[in-house]
Image (cartoon, rainbow, N blue to C red; front, top):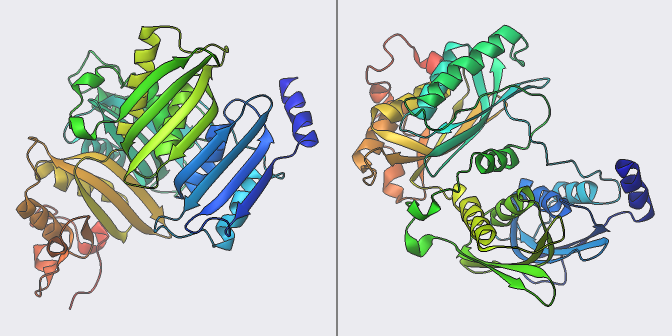
Length: 438
């Protein structure tokens, strides 16, 4: 009945999207008007975030039965949005022809789709964990085609899309899926018996970053945030007070601006069952300021000091999860089964641990981004990075966000440094690094 009523309201009051490239000098202005419902703010922000748009300003109003939001957005280079495909996607996703895809799924585990199997993992973080997980998948003849890995507050979560080495499609055999779950769960447990590790099966469609937030929130990674390794000057400043005259709780956040900040915050507020009625976002400088007037879905503001502290801890965790600690390395090469396992094994053997990773594959090409740290807590030694790049290939593994000299390719051919005896039984073809050097 609720679904039918929602469809009726939608037909009577179809969403309206206005995209304006004229009124603001340095941003595209997107206005979204729609009938209000719980979670609609997250769904709109998710559409903009999936296009990698930067939200510099936002005005939120959803009091009563109507939702009205205005967003100032640019692309990652700070330019207005002029690409027709992106503009059309926004209109179709948020306009009258849209059907806001639910982002509230809570399934955890292994999900079989038409072309891949999605595996969701959570457990205690430790050096070499990604290497061990990917080695198990390689042993089971699973190719990792896409993955995202987050670590935060001693916990690690991952959503990985894998295919069968033989068929190139999803893994359908229940017994094989059971073995994947069992072996990965053993890896995640490690020697820590005090915290649970999870690798379970379910079915459905998932939004990777949405699921990572849900998984870490459910895992209570926000507990013990006072012991966070993030420097005090970089930690977000989060405050929660009650506006008694209006019966709202007012959340204010000051932190360093970064991509997808608004999405991360709104994810957590939605998971905690809070509704944002009014909001203001200003992220035009290096620091972002966000203010929300909100209530719990039961209509009440924050009721106690304990609830207030929990909201603060959870929002701090949401902001910090995506903060990438460590040196950024980008690998680009032909994809193959075992590529992720071999690369992360090289990191582990050189005393580096992966704090965050993004793995993507398109048209047979793997583009992987890793944030690595020294396992002992010291700054990463440039000599180690140089040795790793010589092993894998100077032009294949690039250092991002660091002095250019770290990316300089020596005049001599780097092929003599490849593998350094690590892959004695493997050819260049097997490692997926076939290319010509002059």
